[in-house]
Amino acid sequence: MSAMPPPNGYSIIPSDEREDSEPLIKNDAVPPVCCSARLNLAFLMFLGFSMVYGLRVNMSVAMVAMVNTTDSKPAQNSSVTSACPLPTGTENTSDTLLQPEGVPQYPWDSETQGWLLGAFFFGYLCTQIPGGYLSGHYGGTIFLGLGVLGTAVLTLLTPLAAQMGSYWLFALRALEGFGEGVTFPAMMSMWARWAPPLERSRLMSLSGSGGNFGAFVALPLTGYICQTLGWPAVFYICGGAGCLWTVFWFIFVSDDPRTHRRISKEERDYIINSIGPQGTGHGWSVPLLSMLLSVPLWAIIITQMCAHWSYYTLLTSLPTYMNVIMHFDLKSNGFLSALPYLGGWLFSTLSGVVADSLIERRVFSVTVVRKLFTVSGLLPAAALLVGASYAGCSHILAVTLLTLSSTISGITTSGYYVNQIDIAPRYAGFLLGITNTFGTIPGVLAPIATGYFTEDHTLAGWRKVFWVAAGINISGALIYTIFASGKIQPWALTEEERAEAEKHRRRSIST
Image (cartoon, rainbow, N blue to C red):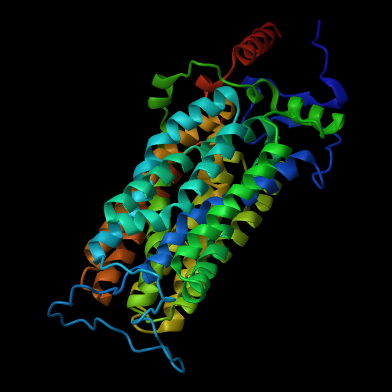
């Protein structure tokens, strides 16, 4: 006797037949995405991660205004020019960043600034895996919401911590990272229950691209606020906005389509039936040993570390480069530092639509699509970073090359980043906790390495920074191309799926 088909004409393909070239569901009528509950969730996540990155990067620009000099150590004898001329036709004031009366500035040297910029990631490292594990069991709504709220509240205390000393500020930034560390794993856990397989790339790229959009808005806005209201206002405004967002998040969001109050029956059935048993929590036990020995998972981990090195290098240190080497004033600094993230946001969002289209039309398998988007994002970005290292004092060329590098790297969102939900949907939040923990290591090391390479503020030092980032990018692309996979892994199957696969195997043998 054949099994009864799922409702609404949806037909789920058996687990053992799930080649990565096939979608997990075949259907005749898909509920429209426009105005749907899943699109509303993606949009709220987009706004949330815009807040998250605004809270994360505001320090990068504010640092330029918080210190009373960006070069407390005079450059040593060097044959390389340590200062570029001012941009043509501008009157630059970056060497004297006057703040409104009563706003304090601090004598932090380059090394101290590097540690403060990297402090966030020390805390961020600690909560990725616990956040992914707990959100996979309980659901991600509470963890994502409280992660943003905690970071926002701590951001409000930044001026007080800075006044107390650099050690206090380091501790506060580390605590911010501790709170924010749960947010991305929580997002992935939610999409494991909400994202139909044929819509994963576009929904996840839309929500995750809020990070790039937040950086794009926060960087110029921070520069403007610093010069008009003083740098403390940056942290008060950003912190208040983050608190406001959490109100809307807890009102409108649900962990699961089964418990959402405003979702249509048609959309709820479509999501539940298309995801199948993978759209449930993983319980308390996870196959740690199998994960540890999974080559496709390690391919994602290593590639994420490599891609994040260049990303975090630019995220934390580009404003300093624009100020110290290019001599742009603070308002121009914020705008030009933001341009790469505008391009990254656009390319990330578009890549999701294109990737889903290629998979849905079976132009390429899931594996090929993930590899194609990863390599297409990492290799050109590396080449552009090398080009930027030789741009010298050509202000337009340097800004253009760095912008194009970050823009193209946005394509990787539909590559290695989405890949973890392909290989183990029900463990996706936990996997992202693991991969993001490793991926955060560059966030700690890159600002420190940049501070070490550029302690004399020379073009030669920044050339090393860009070359190192490019080389790491290339290594990640090669490793991912060789070892990645888009197939769901055997250790990720539920008992129901294993039983289904066994029945199908026996049926195949009998026929």
